Image (cartoon, rainbow, N blue to C red; front, top):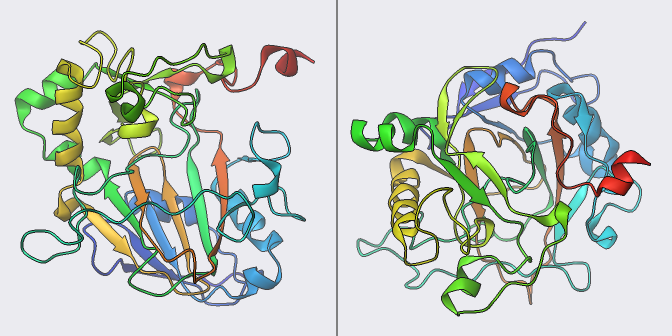
Amino acid sequence: MTVSPEILPLAGAAFGAEIRLAQPLPAGLPDGLPEALADADGLLLVRGLTEIARDPGLLVSLSTRFGREVEDYRTLLTRMKMAHPTVPEILMVTNMVPGARPPPDRPEPPLTADGRFPVQYPHRHGWHTDQSYRRPPPDISLFYAANPVTRGTGQTLFASGVLAYEALPAALKARVETLQGLHAQPGTGRGREEAEAGRTPGPNVEHERSQPQPVVRVHPVTGRRALYLCERSQMDWFEGPFVGMEPGPRGEGARLLDELMAHYTRPEFVYVHEWTQGDLLVWDNRCLIHTATWYDAVNEQRMMWRTTVRGNPGTIYDGEPPSWIPRESATS
């Protein structure tokens, strides 16, 4: 018989919950985790799961509790060297593989004017929700600390789209209610940096084209509204960032996005997670954004494992084929 876990408020956050399992995995895999995630507005923390490091397949088993499809990185258009060598549903987020993406730069200045750790855009960059440049986008991400770096570096930050939406002034709520953002795949040359530098993006093949997404997304489980947008590298700054508004990094759309992102990442809507080995965070991409922080990649080794769950993006995506799969692959 499965013993129900203890569910506690997440310390240091206005949203989220901490789950304390009554038994080790796999015996301690409880029912009701998706409901707990929904009740916590999209963020769960489980500590002390050191058994996953010994048996990474447990992370996939846990992931299946949150949806019917766990992505297999053998079938995605990604760098296979970043997939786990024996469990291809796990993406390795690490500096221990040659050619891996480096950590983000430190903010400049490193602290806010009142001496605090910076979380708010534009002082803090990199805020995004996973794979928003795909239609349908994914639902849930699980992120496991197999080998984190020194505390005080390598944190992961989360902002609540639900709290941010609810705190919008009425006029701004009305302005964004039916607005669509244009989300771009990083590396396709359509980010803000490229636009500000005056570079002309090359043509994108069909499965890499930017995708429109609602700025206000209704959660398919809770029914709550949340802001759904990203910033610098994951929005299209040539045709967007918003559909039907003046495009480009200095246009009306850019000014609105900067206003929304500064609001979205206000400190009262943000949780900062300091990683300990064995920590697992589960987050809902449909209502949260997140960003990474700097760590000393020259002198420290970091190994984090991520799985991605999809299958319930909401009725607005009903019947859509995956936008990121080439048509010849989808029909073969």
